[in-house]
Length: 410
Image (cartoon, rainbow, N blue to C red; front, side):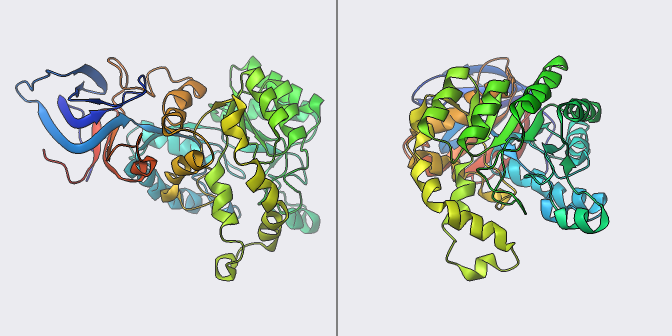
């Protein structure tokens, strides 16, 4: 259904989890006016012109926040930019339909394309979730973001935002800010999809990371670091980044350092399982780079062994999926994956609401609170008892506008 104009709306669910309490409350209604939450209570009644939406057998929740997505497909990095943008547009609706009312897009190979998408959503040209963006991932040459080194070798053409040395990193941070960056992202380590490096290799020296983060701090822009292994995570933490992305090969002592520093951890665990569970499926790997499969084979045992460490680490965990590495519609599976690896359903839900809003420094998001943004979803069932209910989103309200309403009375 098309998005509607914000109005006076009364939501009547079976239960409400507001992000503040440990358990859902029953019999509580929520009234929204315009794009804000106006009232919360047990005795709320509709007024003249109030739209009443009954949500029996549903739990009302704050809108989900995904802190690590990719709208621009890196496999299209040598295609025209207009085509890359057009391929991304339907994905905005995919996120909304699955309850994600805010996303942080952490960049593409080159071009500030996600900035254009953010602007189009903010201006009402496109329907989509609220967006915060890092235009590109800064990477060393031969590192995770150096997408087609064969082109560089043969034709001198570099694809990716490749930067070496402290001075050039400072300059590129300022370039990202000029594009309109909400965040700066850099590759502290290699990655599984990299053509030439390995997830355990380190992308930058400590001096380079310090220079990058210092330049971002001067512009009051937070930094996210792609980092898989111990040394990369430790250097990134020492440099002062706000979030560590992945850390799937980091040990307990390293994750304890993340917690001690007060940095956020965005584990992106489903993205790893998506490939690990298909290692022996030859059909799945058809058309994919041989290096991707071999890299997951090489690190499969360690990935499985480390999967339970984030839950025990004490780090502030924020929800992020790395959607784009797998189909965007499956991002909700991160909830179940986090619970499978030791988080309680409550902590997993907080990761995608309260903690995610704190990471993104969005004070009016992440809870159902009077005066906050009317970003609200409803799921069939109780996700605190059955976390897979997060995959059964039937109602989505973003900025007070109803974007999805299935199987409910109105």
